[in-house]
Image (cartoon, rainbow, N blue to C red):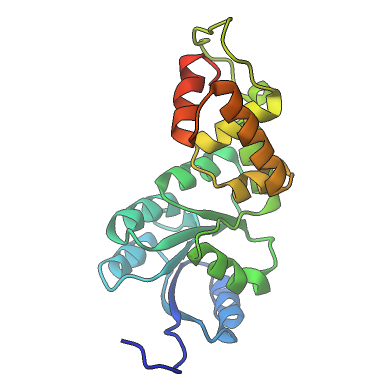
Length: 226
């Protein structure tokens, strides 16, 4: 129970990182933030698992290259043990395999270590507030994965030639919706405004004759549009 007028309880942040220099830089970046506190630091996957056995944190920041395993495994375990904890990657790995595997394991943010570390405090706040801080290079990579002309060839689904057709940008929007991205996140990934995304969504709904995201995805798949 909080006392009226008292400052809010700081968000508990745990870091999984084997680089001592980055650990210190991380602590320094958060030292000036009254609303954030580092409650644990693990340098190995084993140490991270030990922390996961204790009280949950609100935010977990994980490097992927650990001396005794992969940070992706730590993310998966944290997602199961601390379901309310927001998880963000901070790493040097920028390849698609690590990015997609981290997201699938439960990460909601992905920052490269060439990002300005002083901004990490605000990134943590955004993450905890429901946002998804993503380095621009990673955001573009995620977007490219879902562009129709960038995907590897696959067995074509039956297409209803008499059904509705979506433009390339409308299809792109719908593909990102199926991955669970919010309208704001889709706007960032596509490099357009939120209003433009909403325009695409309205057109999709009208063409598919639906009223919700779930119905839109169902109808698009039924017509072979996804």
